[in-house]
Image (cartoon, rainbow, N blue to C red):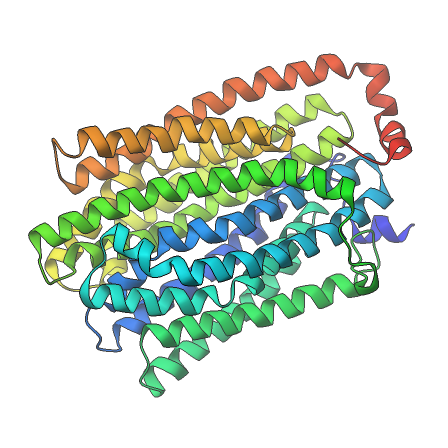
Amino acid sequence: MSVQSVKTQNLTEGPLTSRIFRFILPIMAMNLLQNLYNAADMIVVGYSGVKGAIGAIGTTAAMNNFFLTICIGFSVGANIMVSRHIGAGNERATREAVHTAVCVNAIAGVLIGTAAFWLAPSVLRLIGDEGEVLRLATVYSRIVFCGTLFSSLVNCCINIFRAKGDSKTPMFVMAGAGLLNVILNFLFVLAGGMSVDGVALATVISQFCSAAVMIWLLHRDEGWTHLDFKALRITKGALRNQLSMGIPSAIQGCAFSLSNMLIQSSIVTLNNRYYPGGSAIIDGNAAGTSLESFLYTCSFSCNQAAVTFTSQHLGACKFSRMRRVRRNCLLIGTTLSMAMAAVMLLFKETFISFYVTEPHAMEAAYVRMGIMFTTYFTLAAMDTLSGFLRGLGKSLLSTVNTLAGVCLLRVLWISLVFPAYPSLETIYISYPISWVLTAVLSFVVGEKNLRRLEAGCGPEKAQTAGEAERAKGDLL
């Protein structure tokens, strides 16, 4: 048996349902643990005694995601290209994609982290932060952005591991890093008397450790995704392919975050109107958002599975199985989302009390949970179908769908509907409406493009697709 067959999984053969489920579970476990550790950040900082600390961290989420999503987009491009080269049996292109991806993400991490560090205060003011909340949010975000390089490399390595069918290794690494994060939280905040600066510093240190371990593991890998430090360079063809997949993903993520920043601004406006000088609505929204991140693990895991499995099957021209990939990911994602949402709604008082105990803050959190959690399965469908479309190589179309179905709709909603009915319910209802619209668009566009690809790659072409790809050495 070859080294490659041992180290890299061919996902285009064997039973799909069980393989998808086994692929998804470690991703879910990893993200659940990470979200648990992130939740610990907010819970621990609440014990610091600093008023508005929880809300300050919550207001930075959309802005932080805006900048970090650019790096994540490049990582998604790496996942797609490495997966497709593996599916087509192209070793040289796989190695070039891996080394190019690491270089690109390192450069992006430095540039984006630097820009975000200096722009953070201005962006937070635009969102509506003021006074002590603004000061705390600025301190927290600036420290976090000092670790953007490490975060970018971590996301890159995670996607390389997933591209070859290994979702367990990242789970173990991130679980260890998250545990370190929690220990440092207690050390810095409870023992050291720090606040938002303590949890931010703990985040950066844990990101550095996880990046170092991930890089070392890829260096020790004996398969096609082995990382040779002497071979680190940007290959023109690999760069072009990665950017063609990654840039649309980055644009989609940034637009998504911009719409969320607009929504966050509306929430801050409501808070300043009804609780001037306080942070009840901001704190309650932050608590609800943190709990919501646990639900998102279902959607995200199925999105990653759809991207990886579809990309490998496209490389092998196995179209009939690609429809089964889409169906199974949809079924698993929506079922898991509904089950987890039901449990969290059943015990919502207990979960919310970990974050906030002030009655108005708890009420704001309940409003968010009541609308978002009952409809969250539609986000799982949207993310899965978007991942499927991206796995088909139609990253730009996926971006256009999201811009139209999510971002544009939310901007119009906040601009036109919210001023007439200024309430939390008005804000939150825009989410499920946008999820359903985007899911329908993604399914229609995905099926149309799948049929077009299938028609252009008939039975004879499908049998020789791998040989042709290996011969020309450049997939796109």
